[in-house]
Length: 169
Image 1 (spheres, rainbow, N blue to C red):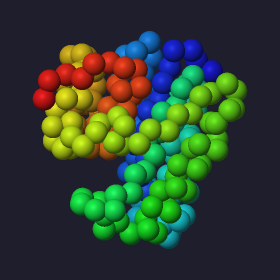
Image 2 (image 1 turned 90 degrees about the horizontal axis):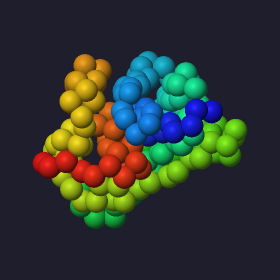
Image 3 (image 1 turned 135 degrees about the vertical axis):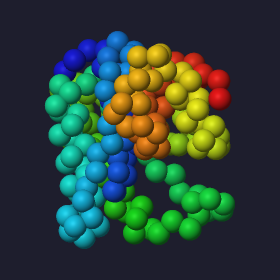
């Protein structure tokens, strides 16, 4: 376990955003993808969970893992989500949570989208996230993931967990 490291994850069944912070600075970011041909959606979800765990382990088991926990809305955008999709997302979350929870002193935290970003529209939030980053961190994001919303959410979750103040939109 490396002290002062944090991994933040925006899990998904087809794409998962993942970011690594050391000493409060963003040092890596990526979008993990599972091929649609990798089997049924449950198998793909399980594969995504393993892929995320493997990436975190490659980063030397961080002190903290902050994982976005799904939020189901009864009305408005997102209300039409297929419950089976949510269950598949739970497979991804369960794999990550089960691997790192209370193992070697790792601390896994769950955060709901409304907690870390409120009801801010995605475009505005993405601008805030990028505006919060240093020039070097912005370049890293640009070079590795461009403007992928899953990666930017992972970066934003990390910023929130580190309590770095939001930049201007």
